[in-house]
Length: 271
Image (cartoon, rainbow, N blue to C red):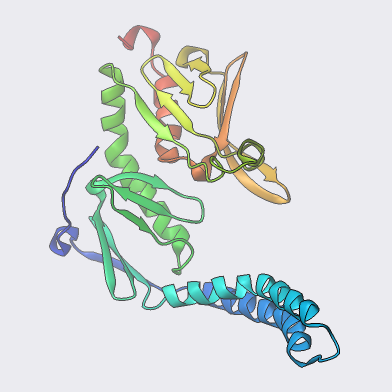
């Protein structure tokens, strides 16, 4: 879909709440920078001042120090990017500010939303707004985005499906093009998503299909990715089970609501 609309601040309506930069996030980055800098100095100081070591050894230690310092470099970059961060929530949309630039959207302009840690909004014109963990109250903002988009998108998507169209719910797969992509994908529960129509739901990775009338269970299951718990969207019938990382599924909250709608339909009413 392409829709080259632009947002006028006056379209956003009444200001509901302001959210500022998360100091917890700043402290987290500063802690990361300090730890990384301390570890890197253990390598760099001997390389600079230890004259008894050979030049090759000192260069090797310096390179190791640079590798150890990479989290520090990333942390400093992240702190730089957080300059002037804030988010204003309005009754009809939001404005995210970062380093003097405004990213605006009305609720009606949102085409997709991915939760996870990115809080990534994609507008109908292709513009991406991503504020992640950089603001206070990010969970509260995420909940509002979900409620507003669900209210608008669910009736439209359901109507399109019942009129014979299919709708894609794409998954974000960050490891897709890496050499060990399949292994990493399976480990992180990050898959390509689903195609949904009036008769059922199809897994885009494997092509397997579950008919709405055969669904035995669907919902969110908390599972372990290593030691970290993650939310996994699960839907199954008697033969197969589809699973994907809920936080990496575009419009996953809408798919969940759509499952409730479609599995409750009388088979005689689906056309």
